[in-house]
Length: 364
Image 1 (cartoon, rainbow, N blue to C red):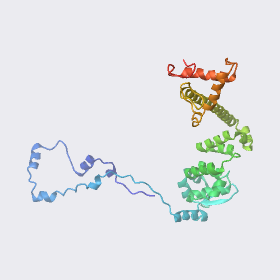
Image 2 (spheres, helix red, strand yellow):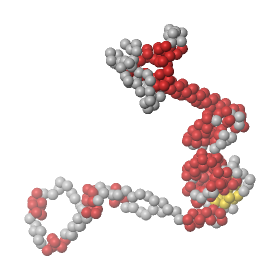
Image 3 (spheres, rainbow, N blue to C red):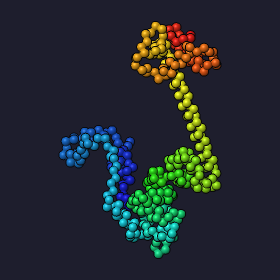
Image 4 (cartoon, one colour):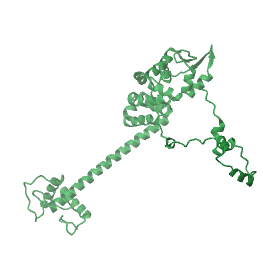
């Protein structure tokens, strides 16, 4: 589209430069007497008032307000989309014929294709011309997928079921011809509807070739999670022969995940043991200091009918204390129950902060 001409003197001139262009100013040639004579001229002279134009008005307050950044909104009426869709369907005035995999011809317009994609513009420019029609080929994908792709270029319209059926093919086309809006839609549809354990390997390879890191990461997580099932698919068997480096990478991810899983299980078990020891220490201190139901220090009056104790380990520890008090063996290593009691008493003595006032037996 032709652009309106712009005067370069207005676009590049500075305030001082524009002032010099309008007036013939000569620096260094005026005499002091001439300047003094000019100052003596009366400003009330009629000739003076007639020759000097009136100054421009002062800028209004509205001009000094800061510029407000307007939000950009886009609304495409349904009629406009239908018009572009109709132009694609009817092929009115088409000057390009697109040959598909099964030799189907899709009429199109070089201007529309060129504006939508610079890659397509290069294809159209280099295409052979016959009887005023340029012919280009889009092979390797079904003709239906090519039709959906060209239709999207015209009107940004697509059918949801068609997108699910040809999502992988459209991802290849949108990446090859740099149609980013369609590429985002294809990735979203594949993530939500098309990705399965059967095609996870194929989608992973395609995602890496089409520069779709999020889709690649999702496929990787699915493969590692369902490795046993995916490793028995046909896609995995083909990948092993064609891309052994990828197989090695995936196996390393699986091993790393298993090691992390085992480490997590170990940490959870350790945390469970620490929690049990903490509860046992609290219950031991509770029994020896305050007393609990039927067991406690000698200076406490116990009530067997009181409310159930709030310490979860108190009941088991009470049984252990009663056994420890009447056991005839008691030597470390002789009785398993007494050994546990000795370990609890030793642990408490190591962590007790008030050994002088503590009522736990054998505390420092």
